[in-house]
Structures are given as C-alpha cells and as structure tokens.
Image (cartoon, rainbow over all chains, first blue to last red; front, side):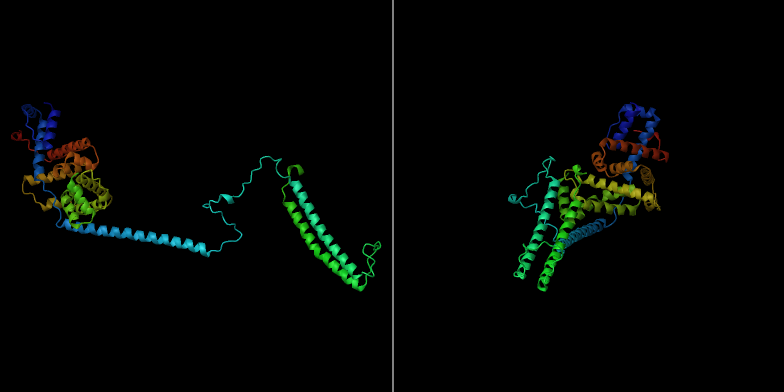
Amino acid sequence: MNCLECQEVFQRRLDGETIDLAPDLHEHLAQCPSCRVLYLSGKTLLRGLKVLPPPTVPLDFSKRMTGLVLADRRSRRRRVRLRLVITAALAACVLVMALAGDFLLPVPRSVPSRPNPLANDSKKETPEIAPINDPEESPHLAQSVANARDALVSISERWADNAREQTRILVSAANAIEVPGIDNLPERTGPFELEPAAQALQQTGQGVAESLQPVTKSARRAFAYFVRELPVLEGYR
Amino acid sequence: MSAEDVLLVGCCLRGETQAIQNLIERFQSHVFGLCFRLLRHRQDAEDVTQEVFLRVFRSLKRWDRTRPLKPWIMGITVNRCRTWLSQRARRPELMDYLQETAASPKVDDAAELADEIQLAVRDLRVEYQSVFVMYHEQGHAYEDIAAALGRPVGTIKTWLYRARLEVLDRLRRRGMISEVADELP
C-alpha cells in the first residue's frame, strides 16, 4: 500500500465508515512516519469531535422567535394594505382631476372637434385629396389671380352702376318738369348749377358715392394683400 | 422532500402559530449551531438565527416543494452568516474569543482537545468551516451540504478533505497528537 491509498482509507474512516484495516496498511504505517502521524491525527480528531460540546440554543428561543415571526407578518400585511390604499387613493385623485379638467376647463371654439377614431361611419368619410403629381394638371395660379381680379372689378363696377342709377333716378324724380331728362342733358362744360332742391339731392348722391369709397378701397387693399402673399411662380420671375 | 415538510410548511403559510413554532424548534439547533461556529459569538449567532428564521418565513412561499427543506434553510443560514461576517469585518468590534472556553473550564484532555478543534476550525475559510461543521458536528450528508451551499458534491468533498487536513495539521502543531506506538491499530 502506498501513501495515496493510505490517505484514502483515512478519509473514509473520517467519513464515518468502519473499515477493517488490512495487514498491508499496518506495514505501511510502521514504515511511513507521515502517514502514521496522519492516522493518529485523524484518530484524535474523531475522539475530539465526539466530546465537542454542541452549542446550546437560548432558552425560549422558539417562543420568542414565533412571536417575532407573527409580528413581522402582521407588519408586512399592514404595509401591503397601506400601499394598496395609497395607490387606490392616487388613482382616484388622478381620475377626479381628469374628469374635473374635462368639465371645467373651457374648450376653445375655434378648435375643430377631433374626429372620433372609434366611430366607424364609412358614409361620412371625407374624400381623399389626390396628390398632384403632374405639374401640368395643377390649376394655373396666374389664371386664378386674373379671375379673382376680374371678379373684383365686376363687383366694384356693379356697385358703382347701382349708385349711379340710383342717383339718376333721384335727380330725374326731383326735376321731372324742369329737367328735360338726364339723357338729354347738355354736354357738361363745368359744374352743374342746380336749384336748392336739386343741390340736396346732389349731396345725397355724393354721400352715396363717398360711402362706396371705403368698400372699393377695402376691396382693393384685400386684393393687394392677396397678391402680395402669393408665391412667385417660376415663369413670372 | 418529505410529506411532513410540505404539511408543516402549508400550516405555516396559513399562519398557524403552533406550526410556526414547530418548524423553528425543528431547525433551531442546526441553524444556531452553524451560526455559532461560523460567527464565534453567542449574541451575534442569536441575532443571525433570528434573521434567518425571519427570512425563511418571509420566503416560505418561494420554497420549491420538490426539494428538501433542511438544505434550503441551511443555505439561507450560511448566506446570512457570510453577510454578517463581511459586515463585521468592516466595523471595529471586540471579539469575545473566550466566551465559550471561559464558560467551560478545562477539566481534562478531552475538553482541551475540543477547544483545540474549535480553534482550528475558526482558522478555516468560511466555506471549509461550513462544510466541516455541517458534516462533522451536525451530521449532514454530502448531498444536503451541496444543496445548501449550491455546489457540486465533488466540490464539497474536496473542501472537506482540505478542511480536515488543515485541522489535523493544526492539532499536530499544537501538540495534541501523541505519537505513541501503542495507539497504532
């Protein structure tokens, strides 16, 4: 038997196995002092472990510990309950604030109402605007501006015609006898010299014309503003 | 895993006081013994034992019922002791080395030998201490120690082999080994 085999036997004995020592182990122990010391040390260790006093548990430890465990369990339950209450209270606060904000805060009228994404009304779907891919298909901007200008001019002319016609009717009504007719008026070389009654009508006519002036000025100004805001087209630079 | 463990744990989870006390009484000597050997301080051992049981009952729901209960509790014990030792190493303290030996005066060689073995175990690494105490003092099987420490059985055997060699060397250096020929087998 060699030293390794001898040590293995020692370890098995320390593990608590009861092994009959073979005669060749005796011979090895008699010849090998290190293994002999190891064997004796193991024997001493086993003897010492048997007399090793076990640590004694403190008196009433289990009762005290049971009380601690129950108290700990109660405090943990209280904490969990408190956490639940706080969470529920916070959630309720948030909900109340959200509802109050929805009812109390003024909704601006200019803001269009947002479409309801949940509504499934296919009949009211807004028509999609097809993107303009071909520049030739796009409406001609200059043509649009010209149309707008013509419309404005025609409106102004119509206003002016109306005013002139009303003035003519008033003047003809006032001087039906004395005035031969507004169409037969002599060629005007200077200011009319009207009678006092006709002067009042003339002032009325002037008032109508002056009242039309702000309208035409506003229209002109709006048109100028409209034209100024238009982007400059490539072909018109 | 034993049916008794499962039944006991079930009663503890329902909050039965008697079951809680039974579980504590069943494992308190092992837990306190290991704490006392590793921490080498009676009061510290008691404090850590309390911590261990509090943690055991807090995490009893997470115990895997397919595994034995005892190694699980001993694993918690070893972890708490290691944590306590690392915390204690960072703070200055008065080590009460003599509290156990002073309480038991040396009356014969057996008591002296026991003291020397305890001193030898104290000088071991924590892993070796755990394995040595759990195997030689508390009689745990290799498999249980492996489960408690989360190591393979082979590692546990290696640690125990080295721990024994260190203890034997210490005993030899302290003159506790008589090399008398008549002690040979």
